[in-house]
Length: 426
Image 1 (cartoon, rainbow, N blue to C red):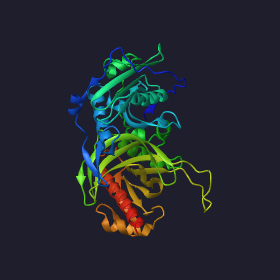
Image 2 (image 1 turned 135 degrees about the vertical axis):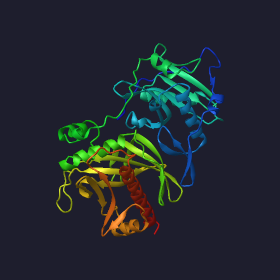
Image 3 (image 1 turned 135 degrees about the horizontal axis):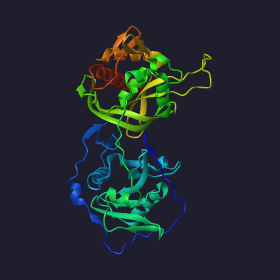
Image 4 (image 1 turned 90 degrees about the horizontal axis):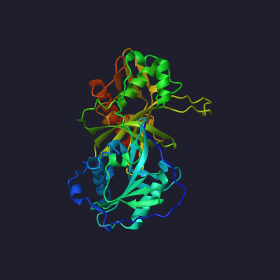
């Protein structure tokens, strides 16, 4: 997991936006015109970019066009590592309760995988002037996160400023510095190439090692999850994080899996106000209505309740296979699948079934709906048979059994969402 660290500058000071030269703006228009914009898709009738940095579908606006080109400029011209570029990040992510959202924040990464804010980039439409007001907005964000540099741009010109301790203000630079130049003027940072280290089957069976792994990273499985489930749960979680094995693109009657987007860090909420932040494996799909969507999968151990439910039963901590969908404004959970309850470890395979439970809606009608419209899922009596995975070997998403399992869960979550929408229209 990547940590973002920032420092709040409390002292207020005067800013010097003047430079010894009248015109210190760098003309970048020609270079930006050569920058390739991300792929375009449609969602809810709106044209969207598949943002390669946020790995989300973002509505196309004049501001977003500039933002995407500037991010690509930072990566290709200024040589900023892609993982150090974060778009439209709320200031509250750095300092709780702080308002505002920066267009782009460039970070430098330490050897222990911590991102420190280095530069704020404020993007405006091409018809906007780069006034002091624009600079003041960028300065405010720099104050909050402790960045030494900021850039303002309208997609035609670009101006860069650096904080000077001696004058306690910002000075405009004659040129736009590269990433290496910015970092070398601060402290040298060694970038570490991260690679997932998969456990062997023998290691997966070491329950003490698995508990250390779960507690040291994300809480992968519940504290009350039966011991026999733990090796399989960690195996599946690591398969989600293994970007070297991509889920193949394929088309079914209910959806098309367009692209495996890999792993991203994200925070999704559920209907009860809970938050599930962590690493997700995300996929771009086209649904039956022709809209593009992003589905994200992860696994979590739930919190243990200190209270008792209506039947005077203590709520235990269990393992959840978590599926979410991105929306324009509010991204949300679609399915919190209780693996402890519904997965049957039988012989050399794990069988995934479900009772069709869906919050606030009739589960019997959902099961009937899924049984009628599904291509990959079977309704067997009162139980939905979603799929199965081998439990006697390491899992890889480009494998035949693993890919079929993921496609089935995609179809199930999409059918649940379509059923919910249809019920709300009644």
